[in-house]
Image (cartoon, rainbow, N blue to C red; front, side, top):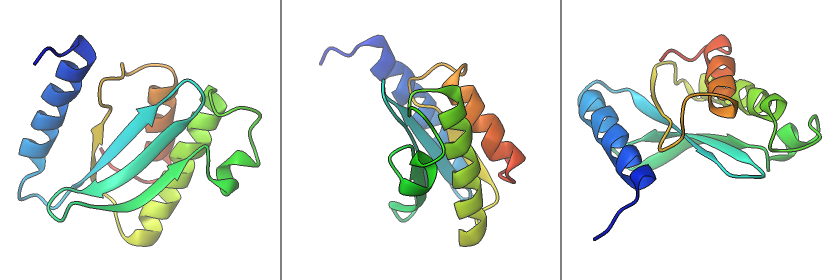
Length: 120
């Protein structure tokens, strides 16, 4: 099977995160960035369930932004995912950026989630 670089990068990072989190009880903060929106979800890999999620498609986040493809939108999603995680009792997570480089919207979301109370 032929894979592109992005798929290999995501697989390598996800393997590292999952092997590090085995037995620690920490969940995974996974993000996805498209051209028009950004999505974040906290996943419990032991049970295979999504605990909380937030995105620029959500009504609470969408009302305060002009576009879902901006750094301001990523900051709002980061703050919202931290607030929802706190309500669900999640404090410590691993950051799974997938195949996306850690800059721009990805970095803004991570910084906002950290300032909102998530530890990673």
